[in-house]
Image (tube, rainbow, N blue to C red; front, side, top):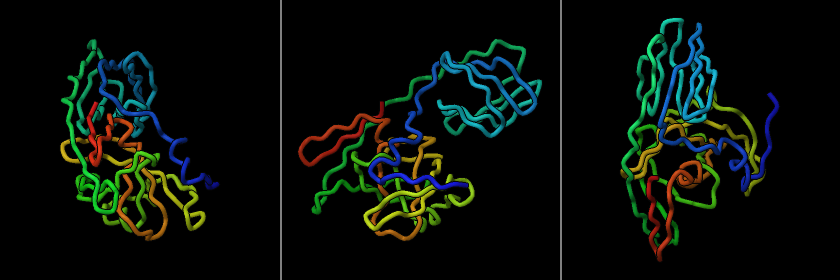
Length: 215
């Protein structure tokens, strides 16, 4: 597979920037063997088993009688033959405040896929980024499930893998289906918390504080 080469400052702004959002209406319009036709907030998608819509709805299984869909980590059976229209309750907004450290950086602890990590919060970064050693510690199978490419770093070009994280949390704020990059090697530093997570939130700066508000 041919590698993609992108500058580090821009590589993630070009990829997977469609934010997940709260779904208001979902209809299963048709079912086939290993495929489902879904209408999600007015947009039609034909998804095979294992595929996920831009809104974050994943088809777990499908046949002529019904389908199992996964939304926000929860799976539910949808049977064909009924008029299926599901309204999802708008999630409760959460707020977290992070303070600058003695080095002038916004550092915080959080979770990736339920495992504790240390983040460097950077609104100038286009996405979450980590090195391969950090990914291995988190159990992220970037070599199996990731899309391989190349990015430009301060040290030159480096191999990287585009992956999807099941969940990313900072305090009480949790987002699912978050894109990230795993950069080959053991580059030093904490995991970079960029805009594939922060772009889903309202971010405000006030003096030495940064406030994250879940929309």
